[in-house]
Length: 498
Image (cartoon, rainbow, N blue to C red; front, side, top):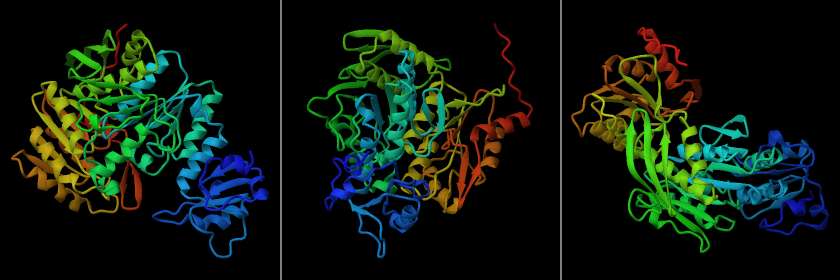
């Protein structure tokens, strides 16, 4: 593909010369280490490094040209293309280079603070139940057909995203479900992408270290529904019960499916039954009524299932396919995931790392009527400090015992983080144990658990690492808990049924 075709639609500060526009482009890259001969290298200004400093390296590797929103560094002799917006340019160039697969693949984007991952797993399960070959892109991992790939970001850079869609199309895939994070929307990672269905789950306090205000945070989420550099999606599935849901602006031609528990919802749950075995309820939607059964539990998962039903309906899938897909989704890694070694109390691991998510997961545990709820959690370092006392207060309000520990302290002193959290915990009289070593804290929490209790290990969920200063060390709450339980002599009995 020639350079002029790759950059079609990209806003340039200066026109391409005729000779430069006819150059053949073999590959795109935003990492100079991956530049190949005939490649187009995008040099982004960053918080830690200026991509222009790698331009010479890219040229030596054979780059045909470098694109940047900033001027070329002094002395650079290669072809330099100045664009109005670097990441938007990369997104449009990647879309052109890979043949616009989003025009042929049904892309669902799911945004919101909580519930994105579970909803995406449910949607993907419904599409697979319909016999489709799919991609699933999100926080835990990426699925491409039957292949599982590691997730670098919740939403990949645009180049990686279009490469995944192109690979999906080559294998005969027709649907992709992705978590659209607020960072990805604000940083134009999905700029210009055509979505068929956009989903809004909810909005609560998070990521204010990046967005600064809730208004900015909401504005980032809003972009998915009006089309960031692309037409508005034909369908929107929006949580009617969330205070921000009715504020979402949609395209003039967009069909909205409102989901929730109230009478104003067009995709509504009735006769909800929740137990340790899961959920059962009736869905009323667009004149249809059908019953769903799910191994997932709790009120928050009623909303996630309704959102997934809305997506299925937006694609015209029959109710029986939606029901089968929901039943097939037995669990989601790190989302109220049980660690069972035959102990007389329940241990669950959950990714809850905001005050609202923590409230949801503890409320979910409470709905199962345990004798006590013991909550272990911490807060991440180098992130929004204002949510720390809020999380502490929620844990103390709703738990019978709190175990405060570290999460991913990053460059901060874990004790400083924990002191911020204690401000909220001390607003209540709930007993609290403080242990900065997360492995030791998990051990103490298990020691404190009594028969009939639910112990929640919150914050890290599916993560298999801990970030301490400049090191990333292996750490998995599930494995640590399992080792502790086995050390106490518990062993899960093998299933000898059937």
